[in-house]
Length: 65
Image (tube, rainbow, N blue to C red; front, top):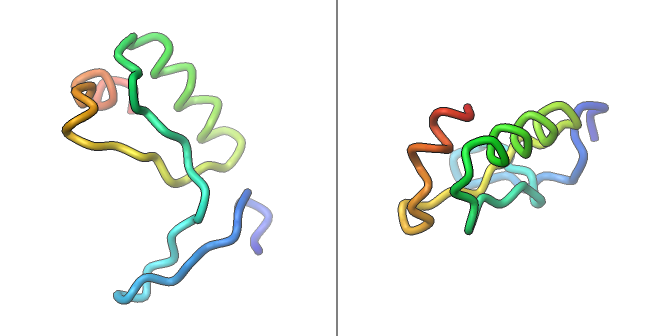
């Protein structure tokens, strides 16, 4: 495991390694909270961010990123 990783990875069929643990964005619609969460998560090494159109927060997520 690399020092920048916080979790083991799995290798997908296309060869890409994906962390097995990530930060979720379900129920997050407040832009400031989203920014704070993503900044802290990325700072400590998270690289997998769970998103979905059904979460209905893609505008806030885009601004935060």
